[in-house]
Length: 440
Image (tube, rainbow, N blue to C red; front, top):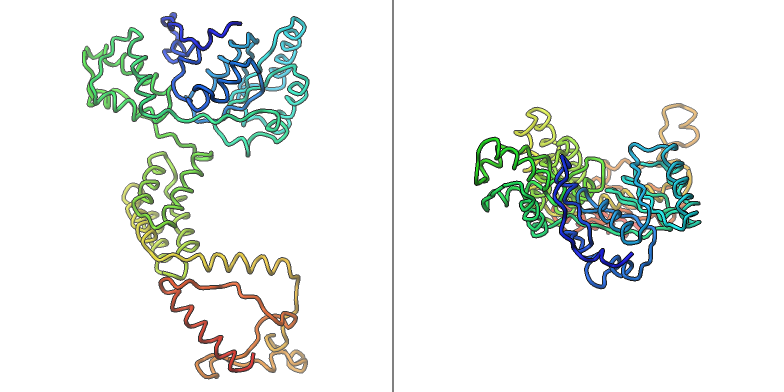
């Protein structure tokens, strides 16, 4: 097949009742909007296409950015039979039928591209079933996924396919797509405000944008509106939630951004990510739990009031619900972001857990043991124990509380000089000086 795939032939008008998004699907690489990091001059896929080097690949990116389109264009460029199956609907029967069809193609000297949409929904055994056919060259595998392939695609299949990351469309790219959609004979006239609103509602998803344009055109015709403004568009459309998957990559990326903004002492960024997650449908109760976790992990004893405030905010949300209770959570975030930071307690706890796990079950020193019975007292349990409250400054200088085998006991907790923890550090330094003077 010639390289006219790179050209951008005029797109045909929509046939029958075909959805506008399908009718507008690009027929050449130069018609694609976005993904210039993969399809621009001297970029990986463009070079592979130019060299006519067909290879298995996994296309990873959010919805509506061109994964299916790119797979179809690949098949067209290499004159390969394009077999598409959905991991949501397909089972063993569909996979076997695809393999048989590929064998027939091979017998006639034709390549086969097996495109698996939402490949992350196949289990390990199903994904492994593709391996022998990919290795033998019977099929060229192209998988599409919105989830991180590192977690969702088996290693053996991942090692045999090149991963390409597709990005959400930016505002300029969406604006280009919007103008193309308006030229499809829909008779839709938009003012600048309506155009901006549509781009915002699309939220990086090209397919969503085209569907919104089609929906708005129908509404405008029904209402006899010649020039659509933002007010009419807002009433006519039912904007869906932002791009957000409560159990997927986007969810964990955003909660990570929220946590790191608090840790980085940026209250404005913290509020932004908090608002983004609520706007995307995150459960405020989950966010409340994470806010409490932030208080203990990143503020800790530098400002113990942070943990109390976080718990109060979580309780306030339980009593008031949304949206009133969200204000308490937002103010807790502001406080935590502005508070002095310390992860010393978090680090100390992790170190102590690791040490205990690696050092076995050492005996409790006799002087620290409880002696509730006469026999235990006769065995010396607790006999040499020094009661701290009876000692000067309420501290038994030189006392040893670790197992006896640990002559040089470890130190897990190293307080920072920030906030209250600075005073804690001074107190510990003073007590260690008393130990030194006591000869231990």
